[in-house]
Amino acid sequence: MKNILRFIILLLFSSMVLIAQHKSDYATVQLFRSKTQSISKNVDKANSVQECAELNASVDALERDFSEDKVLLNKAIYPEGYNRTIEHLRAKLIVRQKDLGFIESQVIRITELEATVRGLTDQIKKLDERNEKLLSDIQTLTKNVQKLTGNLFNAATPLDSLRNMIVRLNQGLQDRDALIFALADTLFLQYDKNVSDMKDVEKQGLLGKIEKHSVISNVKRSVMDNVAFLETTQLKGSDLVALVRQQKRFQSQWTGIAPKLSSIYLNAKTRKYEVSTVDSMLSVWGDKVNFAMWRSLNSLFKQKGFFVKEFRNGEEFSTNFVSFLSEQIQNPNEETNDTRYKLFTNFYENLWLADINAIWLPALTELNKISDTQRKNIEAKVEKWRSTVTPGASWLIYVLVLLGVLLIPILAIRLFPKAPQPLKETP
Amino acid sequence: MKTTIIPVLFSLLVLSGCSSLTLKPGVFAWPIESVSKVNEKGMIEDNQYYFSINVKELLYDETQDTVNIENVTIRVIRNMEGYYFMTASKFKNVYVFAQIEGGLKLAKRILITQDGIEKPALNQRPPYIQLLDGENPPVLLTKDGIVEGENK
View 1 (spheres, helix red, strand yellow):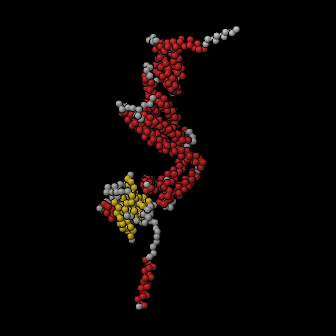
View 2 (tube, one colour; view 1 turned 60 degrees about the horizontal axis):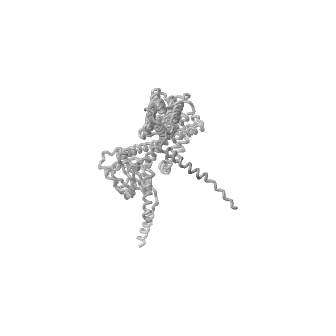
View 3 (cartoon, rainbow over the protein chains, first blue to last red; view 1 turned 30 degrees about the vertical axis):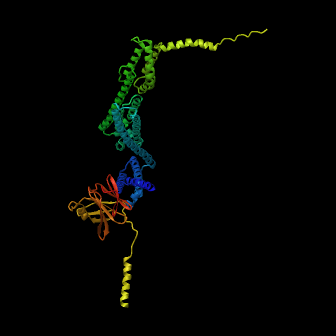
């Protein structure tokens, strides 16, 4: 038994070792050398404080990325090795900074921002991979569920796992969106001044960084991913409202950085093209998410059995819903009190309290799809409808009345028993 | 009698002083492999370990071709014991050489794959030499052959 256990441990250990060592030492050394040479050349060429900060961050990254190969590099690169190569690069950079007259604290601050930028870029890449995998899993699972929804559909269909994946992907997309705008903000922060006050060289430098970290491509990808998510998941109700909110937030964040991005492009044609492409993609996303939202609300009325004329925007929704409510109040078909009461109760309990008043009206007002006045008007109409209906008499009420009639004498006898007879006096 | 004993004793003293000097243990391992292109004369030269050698015979042994030898990239690494391991892309074998005066002598030809190694790389993994080939599982070698892994 011990021997088997030992064999298994040995097998696991040897496979771990094999996985860990599955790279060429020569290639590692060559990569370290080429990165070192590239940084060294860029130090010679550096002219701005941002470039120095970026190089500082590059040396940090080099040190971090190759720390696991320290022993190999110390042996393979003679006489410098890993430690002295890094020291030489740092010393060379300090000399360059001094030659250019930059203050150390300024370089350190921008280096920190540069490190933040790199961290954000890495996180975005990781989220890209995770989101891509989730989206593909959701697509596969959705297809499987669709196949199963024939005769074979039952409670075991993995809807919970699909729902769970959708929630995770939605969160992943939101996190990614936030990271992209944080990345763009941090890049602008490094220059510590308004774009309009920047020299052309600085603009060029910033533009280089924006392109290097693929800010605009990332924004475009975010929009595309969000549209793909919307089309794949076919969400409803509050989930869709959340997506509309996301789209609005994204739009407003883009509106914040678009003018800055636009002004750093020295070439007017490129500027116009890049910004307008994102604008039109955002507009497509907005249209799609709005269309999905109105479609979802229209089908909610149908599912619950209320025939409100179809609407495609806030104005139409308000008009058609109010007209439906007015019709119920006026009662043109002269329905009986009982029928009207039942209809109102169904509307009030299953649609109004659960969905319209709880989710949709606050969301539509918040998203400026309908105005406060329109919302109040709808609420007033519902109240008016409530005041015009009264419960009709039913057999249950007759039974209750009969029971009441029978119970009153019984209760009276119990509560007021006969007064005791006075005892006869004995002579 | 005396005349024969004295020269014999003298000879024994001289011989014992010359032949028994041994330096041990020694480690000759290179930390990383040397990667060099074969020039038109069939030579490879390395600037890190400062050696050069003619590999025409090696190429002929592997490919039976002495014409198209230029620009073949030869990968060499030396193990702890001092043996040289050589291979190249499309080679079926890893060649193990021992050092001799002014050259190398084949000690072992290790067959790796009949299809040829696609992307070879040699790593120092004392006491072994590790052979990588792209995504294929790594193989551990000694001067005598494969230690771990199997022929593909």
